[in-house]
Length: 341
Image 1 (cartoon, rainbow, N blue to C red):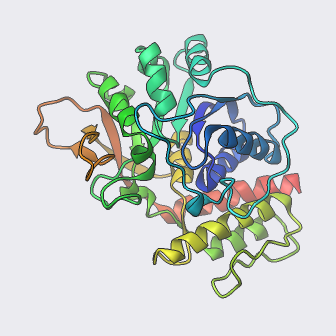
Image 2: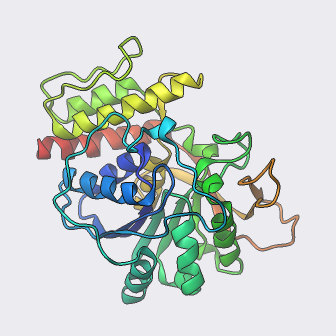
């Protein structure tokens, strides 16, 4: 049974990633922890708990970790993900309670209790993971696999001209994480899903319509560019309705910035890499993060040629297959949505 430790900043595309993993057979959510990013950490945790329950996964331990980046003030993004982080969707109030445990302690405890068994997926700024590595430098040896969504190497940034959002929110944490992996064997290095490949994951209105059809919804789900902004779904399928309302906000945001009526679903792709269900290729590199320059802070740099004379500390995803990925997404989440009704 695939078993996961997740760190998220839920977030529209984090929500899609969580829904996708929940839809896979036998997925075990060992713990899901909240980092501040798209919204503050407490809102992230509430969103996550509510979404897991909506996906038929009550009882998962959801815990808050750090409430601010390591060295700089927190920057959130209501213009991208909405004031509550889930676009236009209004999630039901969760029935479960948040864990009183600290996220970092939770990760270390589970990793030590189940060495070599757990896959770590981080779709948030790397704050909590950096703190965990400080307390447990042997964490890379304890985890079966680590997948990170973050960075932009040969691709323009989505927050500044050169920086990707997750890394820009806490560049010092990202720099610490990459430094912590220097000297580890290739198979232990994190798999990094950067904008170079995640921005190829362009979810469009046709995918939402296909998801509703796969879910057996009786009301066709049409999220179209000529509709009024903020129009709410009337789907008779609960999960489809909430995902549609979230994604419409994301479509409108991308259109506002001349990227088309679509959504870059970065975190879903990272979730599929973690699950081993999506096609991808990766290259080893020595990665680092700029933390000093006001102009370039949060910029990630990858040395694929050994020019720094430093060993690789990451496996950076260099290729993927969006068509295969979206077929998998619609099939898996549609099947779950049909079952949940």
